[in-house]
Image 1 (tube, rainbow, N blue to C red):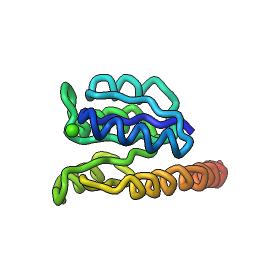
Image 2 (image 1 turned 90 degrees about the horizontal axis):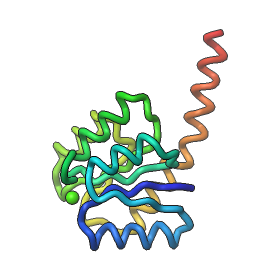
Image 3 (image 1 turned 90 degrees about the vertical axis):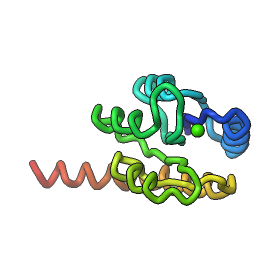
Image 4 (image 1 turned 30 degrees about the horizontal axis):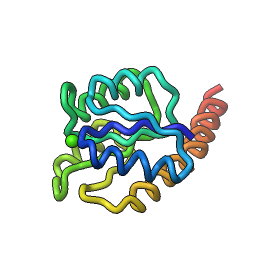
Length: 134
Ligand code: CA
């Protein structure tokens, strides 16, 4: 399983990278929105962890670009603590789930497991819908 972590705070990015690598994921990192946008659009990730407050291009803009381009990869958004409007905007922009900062690493891991295991079911539904449409 391959993940992209888009987070600009170096300590948090390193913690996420270490925890997710320990959990068995192959992890790439991006510390700004431009790099995240490029990697997410060109590499086949199983899921993406996306901070909304990124330099150069903010996370919501990056997420909207991916969704406008038809990229269906599950995205777990990291929001500022208690910022409900960020959650709403994130979900409106195509986020699959979110975690509020500060978070427990276990919560990120659990939510990622949920997103990644949901994917095959989503693919099955799409296939079923396509077959029914024939
Ligand atoms: Ca940030």
